Amino acid sequence: MQLVLTAVVVLATDQAVKLLVRSPQFDVVRLGPFGSLRVVAGRLWLARSARSAPNTLGLWAVSAGALMIAAAALPSSHVFVGLLVGGSLSNVVERWLRGSVTDFVCLRFWPAFNVADVALAVGALGVGIELLRTVGAVVG
Image 1 (cartoon, rainbow, N blue to C red):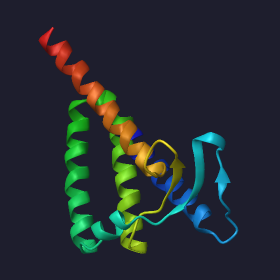
Image 2 (cartoon, rainbow, N blue to C red):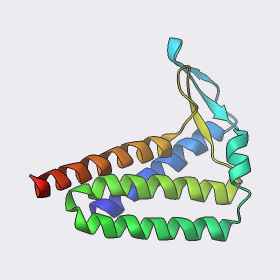
Image 3 (cartoon, rainbow, N blue to C red):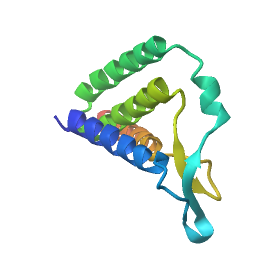
């Protein structure tokens, strides 16, 4: 249940924020010396979106299925797997609907990213830590 709830919250939050930043009323928000919030249309995402939508969705489904199977083996990783599933689904849905992924957090010291990217990074880190802890408990 945590896995599905986390995935749905990430998907809804990411899409809502992207809808907000893509609206005509949205203006650049300055973050002082750190950067800004503004819509970024990256060519990299446009090049990657050339793949057909059914192929991308199929690849996501296989990957999400594998993650859910792994989550059954690591019950403490359900929230982290939910972050991975929700973040990746949000990017797939947007690529399918818009042809690209909207990035909007532009820090001076990092490439532009979005809420789904943060969920993916935190989820991957969390699953990695859970795997290390599980392996450490089995070995130790």
